Length: 69
Image (cartoon, rainbow, N blue to C red; front, side):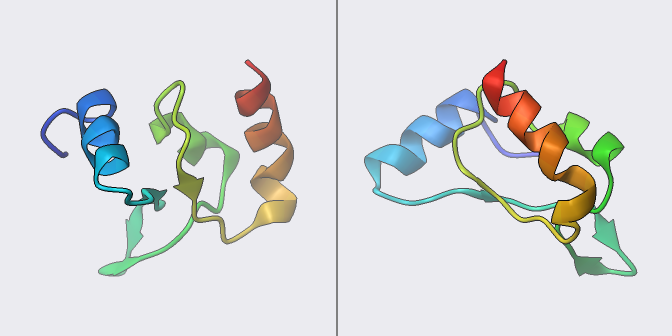
């Protein structure tokens, strides 16, 4: 968890001209992208940064639907 997550943190990073990349849950002590649709619940509503995806064929359609909301 980060201080001010998500809105304040994203504003600070935007002012610093820094792109934020949201990664999926850790597995076996390593960071991975999103593999499953149910993991997408961790993406805050209105998030406008990049999302690291491992299985686009699995989560792609759900990501598009989230963006359209």
